[in-house]
Image (cartoon, rainbow, N blue to C red):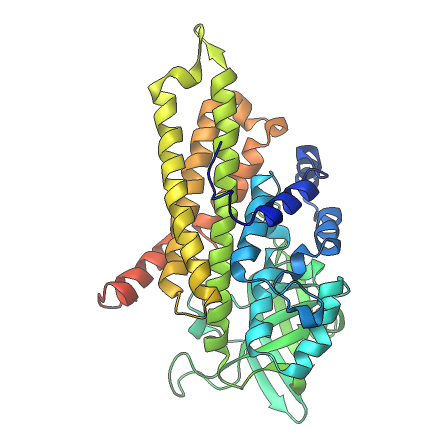
Length: 386
């Protein structure tokens, strides 16, 4: 099946596909069954340099853009894997790259590029705030040469498989100034923090996606771990969120093509009542419609990436790309599961695993309704609804 603008970034696509052939469906199936982390796969990606794509060459990385990073993540999902195990390193990197000091970059980036450190986690979401980031309550209070952190985070991914975490905390009381002011970003060394002011509680969930609740009780972090200026963290985090949405849109695109390829092959081979089920328009049309929507979403994904790499405003495009790609992947998933019939529920066919994985993106990292609210307000100029 053609699609996905395969003629572009051919070397990257070929390289990632070659690596993924070393990890067949049985590997991800077994990891999913154990609810384990695909350690061997992530190590292989790291050794091959794919997770250092965004790191400048002077620090040992490839110096590529979000466009190329999105292609890497797309190909992982298109091959039947799950980029959610490692995608955080891609978009979390942007916060450090764009707003970190020269000293911070020199301290962390070469080690991340070599695979000696992992920056896989970002601590933003809180139980009482959800996607209302400006309502977070976790505080970071300056005391001499350190900040003392207290509060709670939830749905924080890959903490148990990361060395560093980007943390958003309140450095000024709520109610003083604009809602978006008074928040700051820090680098937290999880190796030092866990058990010394930071407690981690895993959350069992529908997808094999390591996610956690975090509890901060007088966690001390060096003041030098502040990224950029104090109080400007919300503005900094928006860069990372736009990259996150564009990259996750690409992952949904990869999922969508996986589902389309899978169901197209099956529908052409599965014979019922003396004819392939793919000969029936009732089967053809949902698959074709999902493919059309996927192709359109892919165009928006590349536009969002292009604008991000050009350092142009891209909030609307990144949000729309994520919404369209998640929706198209979900429609492809439904068609794939439906037309596999009972076999779609069998673990050996991998459809149910990928079905669960792609469903996540209707909700996270931002829900469909929040994206629609953003477009209504910031693109169409309608009154704010919340």
